[in-house]
Length: 163
Image (cartoon, rainbow, N blue to C red; front, side):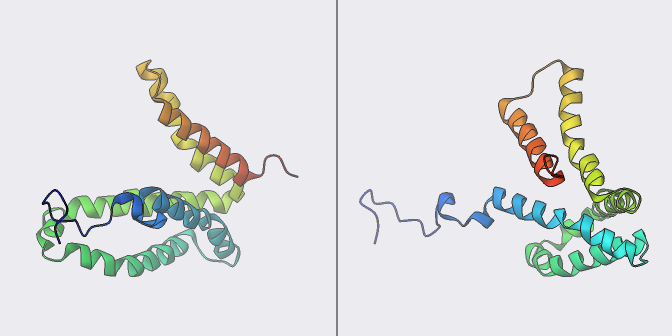
C-alpha cells in the first residue's frame, strides 16, 4: 500500500538499520582484529621451522579460498572488468598484498611481534606527520583524531604500561 504522500514505500532498510558488521567501521574493526593475530600466527610458524615465504603463501592461499566465493558473486555478469584490469589486479596482489606480508613476516622473524607491530602501525602516523610538514596544512580534525586513536591502540597492543 502506498504511503500517504502517494510514493511507494521503499523495501530497503535504511543504512542506520544495518548490522554493525555491515557498516564500514565494523568491517574495519573485524579486519584489524584478524590482522592483529597474524604476527603471533607467523611467529609460531617461523619458530617451528617454516620459512617466511611458506607462511605468507599459506596465509594468502587461505584468504584466496575464503574470498573466492564472494568475488565470483560480485563479478557475476561483469567478467570483462577482470579481463580489462588484470594487470592492475596482479600488481596489487603482488605488491600491495604479498610483498607487504612478506616484509612484515620477515620483520617478525627477526624482531619481537610488539616491535614489528610498532613499526607497522606507526607508518600511517608518520605519513600524516610527513604530509603535515610538507604541505604546511594542518590535517582535519577527523584525521588527527584517527591518528591519536591509532597511537592509543598501539599503546594498548604493545602494553607499554605493563611489565
